[in-house]
Image 1 (cartoon, rainbow, N blue to C red):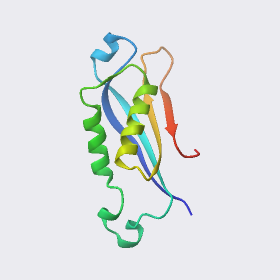
Image 2 (tube, helix red, strand yellow):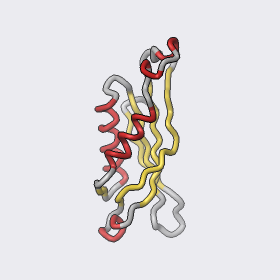
Image 3 (cartoon, rainbow, N blue to C red):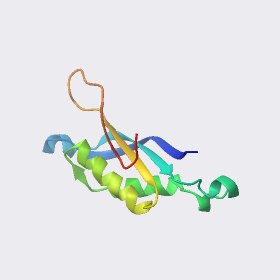
Length: 119
């Protein structure tokens, strides 16, 4: 059996971009997180939030982590968020994807993914 919790399209406002001008204005990126449990979270049996990952707490922490930080690349932002999540949930394998909507003519969006689990 596989046990996965997926958080889709968490909207983050971040200072992101190659140039100072681009980073000067916060821009929206989307964060997707997949958490891969080796064993069933106890919450599967108990129906108690304290026995699983509280995604409200996790997402609040992610928002706070991004405050007052600046990133040039989505690769670096993804790396930093991946390691923040690993600090919060050290025994859970994770996949983290950032989606950016760059100011590039004809390009709708781009993504970068980092995982310690086979995707």
